[in-house]
Image (cartoon, rainbow over all chains, first blue to last red; front, side, top):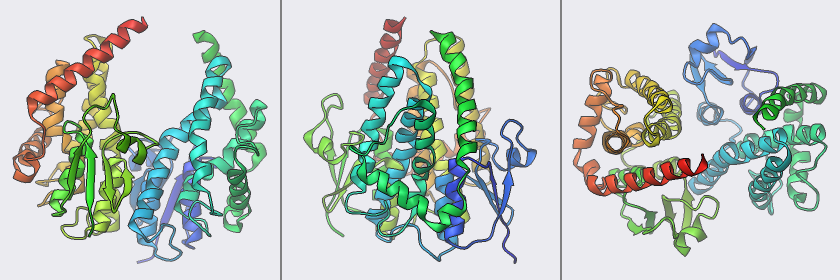
Length: 225
Length: 226
């Protein structure tokens, strides 16, 4: 049976990028299906009725949602270029940090981006409290996964992708040279990888998008004061 | 395979999940009770500095935290009685539902329980029941989520027969209505009858006290905020 792999995504979703990068590292051909999240296609809603989000992977007609679940599926289905460590303890560690990234780090960094005044100051403290773990995890390693990019690097790809965009828009520095030399080096190494580079969202488009997003938050914040 | 210790509390549904998995695979372990989560032990703080929570599994002295991560570790380390299906797509579905059950469902039910009577509570109950409706569809045509035998997803959903019923009592609400969710209701009944499952659940009285105390505390916080 011919393989048919489709990825429902947007041009910018960092969660979708995880899936796309994983497929590219494994050399799996796939088709991009771009969604407009303000007007979700009936197909997306059919394939992901629970969360109604991207990314969705559809492999030979069978849909899967939730990017970290999709990454595990990709690993088990296409065995070339393993992205997960072999050792169960290292796998558990990688899964732990990936969840920590999504549950704690990302919301705290996003909080720094959208909040203002005292709330932002508090968000910055929280974000640093989380980011320091990433810096520690990189000790003695080029990538989170070791010598080569793997699952955990893909899971943290949003850090390389978005933090500097948030910093530029808000005129602040979160990941600074003093506190995060390893994380900064990781960001550069990650971005320099030829496969990652090939699927990198245009920075100017990201700036425009997140500036607009910020605009939609601020009136609400002002109204709540 | 080496020494296995589980730092846990008896009332935490997240901890019991791990016990069920260990017992299903015949893994011997030492249960180290974390007596008071408001006064955490040096052991817990040392081995789970990031979240400072239970359950925490120690294998050969190496810590693993987060119940779903622990379950996957147990599955990969002790190969007898596999909990996850063989097929990658079925495994992915099990993981997807486990995440859904772990996040949306548990905290949805808890939210509904601790809210005082009113519009917010009604909305929370509706939302929690929406989640149960998805689960009702998942169990259709099967005795257990794992098929003929219990598996990964049954363990993750295992809070429903016991903990949910206690949440319903303390929260003055009914979520798992037999008429609305006949299949889930039946699954819950079958699951909790299994001896190995039953032997790990905390006494109902203890759980009632624990949840009642939590709800009083959270409602007092809410009142203080106004």
